[in-house]
Length: 156
Image (cartoon, rainbow, N blue to C red; front, side, top):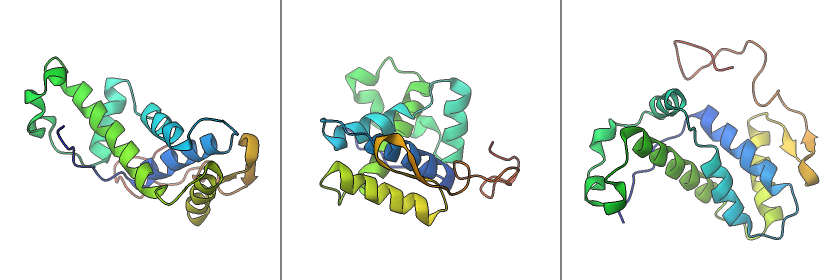
């Protein structure tokens, strides 16, 4: 299978992703937490063209035409540029989560790792059953906080 280079997620993308996945870990579920992690990381991938392009540009990804080798894969032949961009974002999200939570052996350990990451950035952390455990900034952002990653606009 073609190996996609994992593109660098921005700070905001990483924090949003960890916040979302860690909330998943706060719920008692009998399923394997790694499967849940991949499913949640994938589900955070945008579906609308303008969102896909915005995330793509924020990740500083190359031109989609630079996906060498994807044309040779039978299942990719009928995929549009946006489908390929969306796949790259999803794989980057999953790759980041797999690296961050690699040391976790249980759902509880994954929750602790995610909470430590969030707390180190001043974000809310999660207790069991999806309750907020500590209160950092409102989902990581202060009201009217200027985006430091993008000089042209603020992320709301």
